[in-house]
Image 1 (spheres, rainbow, N blue to C red):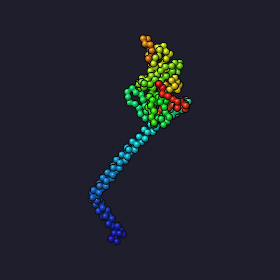
Image 2: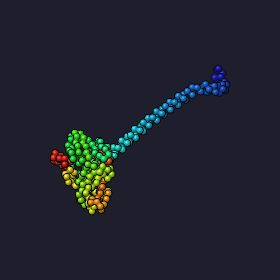
Image 3: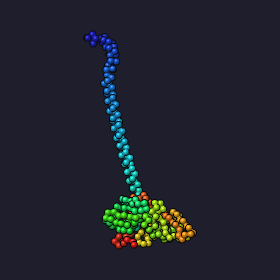
Image 4: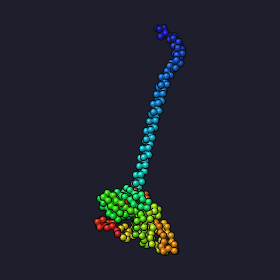
Length: 259
């Protein structure tokens, strides 16, 4: 042993034995290595599946947040439009939100989240950023029912902004051309695209607010009156927020429903 330790004469023998035994050691180690490989593989697969599930959940949450951000962005744009429109309004206004819509086929009525506690009154005019929406017809404590100008039961005094001609715009229940001017002579000075604004007659709506644009004029020589249709200036089918208008503080206490 001392001789081998000093001169390393048995190294070649030991190397040969190790080489010969390597296949046996390799084969013996296969079950253990296979078990370890399978364990690592299953653990890795389980981790990947778990990570994939977490990523899917996170992806859905992010998409939902993006949709919410988009909705908030659109709401912000609408509110800015409403607030911008108040710069041209001399009356006191309040922003309200639509909380319900009447689903009857020809009814155009909505419910808003303001009521008697906010000093609303019957007949109070409603606007959006582009024009007249309608008026309040029923006031509750914390909510109110309103009728849009396109409702078949609604009529509003208007005048042609270009000529000053006065008329009555009656709702038709139609989504697009939702207004019709009544008793318009065939020779009336009207054109497609003419803007109709509130005339202020009747005391219900303040004068000068956009109501609609004329979209169709049908003149029949055999009829006494022309058929004139108009599209509301307000986005009645898309709005979520509206402006409630007070003409003046004294009118709030003295306003009476129109007959």
